[in-house]
Length: 187
Image (cartoon, rainbow, N blue to C red; front, side):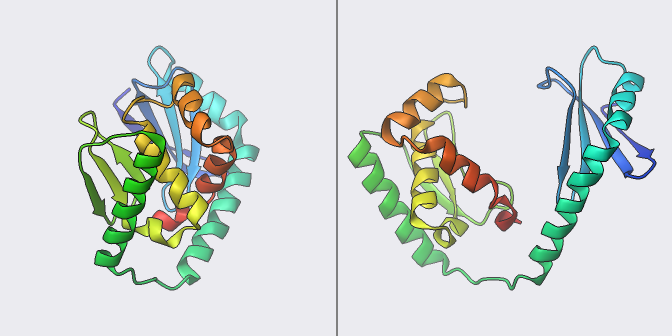
């Protein structure tokens, strides 16, 4: 199989099947504006992946309907203007405060308008933040800042990461779920 191939599945439409070095098992995702993707692990035949996807048509259709509703909501939501300089000042100051309160250090911080993530932390502990963070409620914004600060110590999302973040924020998993529901704001 090539790295990716699209297969039309009746009742669903085109489904993108992609080989994934990271996937340990077959993973089906349905995303707004992107459609259906099947991550196929090495060692699993394309025909078998297609069979599995076809057996999940009702699940896929249910999620496609949810995504259609999200897309409609997004298209009817007016664009909000964010003052980039004000966002830069607010986010940098708050990151410094949280880092000082919790004993974290980082190298430098940049503020950008990103479409795929709220923030990131590099191997060199440089933190990049999405300027749209200023639109979030304070508790969610602070949680994302803390999330990136924890990545200065733990570079993945494994058990050590969650142990570290829940030391500071006991409601970490609940806040993470709330944020995942807001990811459409990134588009």
